[in-house]
Length: 65
Image 1 (cartoon, rainbow, N blue to C red):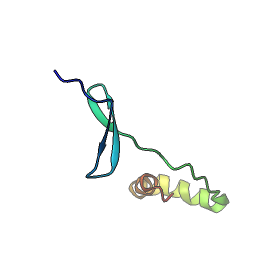
Image 2: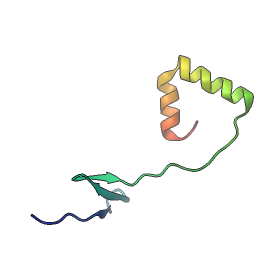
Image 3: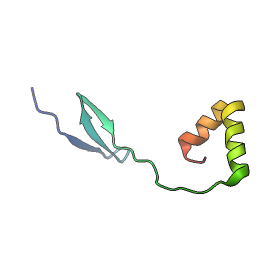
Image 4: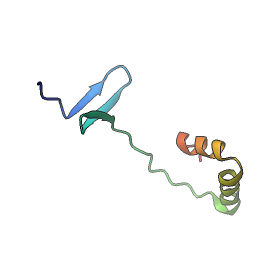
């Protein structure tokens, strides 16, 4: 059996992958940005988390919240 490369690059989507347990996992990094949201921003975040969980999750995953 051929030995698999530890790291590969996919030119189609521009992502780097690392071999983990027989599977290639994309090397993703979260942004290190930290913006203060203030008191009312925190209240709105908690409101979204409790009352609009799907929208909250979407905003978290896209990095907009």
